Image (cartoon, rainbow, N blue to C red; front, side):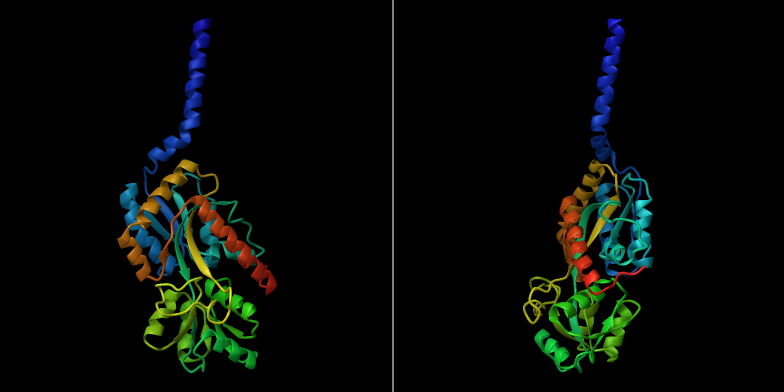
Length: 325
């Protein structure tokens, strides 16, 4: 009898040890096969940066990183695909603000970005550049604000997709500056910039990476960057906050997410490797060349960054009545 009890107790202790350490074991063995990373449309800034980083991640993790593009519906389709996946670390999401802002805009979206997805790490941070057509008689952000106030409803903004960084940044600018400018919607940032370069509209707040090539050639005039401090991404250009609209800052983070319920050890393994890659000077330089700044950090820092984004933009979305079915 004692022998039977002793065997049973030893078996229980061994089982408990396996259960307690299973997260550690998963973390130690992960990954054992290719990792699918679902992301936005091919050729966009996040897609380019994710593919760049994937080359280095594949080496460190010892497995292929396969990028799958699902850019439709402003990140909703991509996010939903990852939410439905097994929480085993082999299906991840890499996306920017649309993935967590569109649920604030569209009442029909049923997922909660901070409950149904597990932030893994921040990838990069991008910012916006306030640009005008050279024919607009302004040299500074203050000049633009004064002009807009003197001609309410007579200036036109090249609006990008609803809920995009360019769109919301422009709406925040107008709200904080107290000006009335008409938004002319275009399908995508590229179409908006084309319209601005041609003189169809007067100004825009696209991503720095999209605007700078036109600034360098003189086809657009840059007035200010949306970062809190001057950035090497737009050398010599003052911040919007310091040159006309105090307190204005938009710095869009891009991040990796896993399905909710993914073991912490697996999240930590991917996070550790990503941070190692993002500290590589060669990687950081390549990201800067593409118009993005490497971030990294802990899963908690990623969670907090997304949470603050949702608070900030959720307030503006309600203020301007942007919610839709």
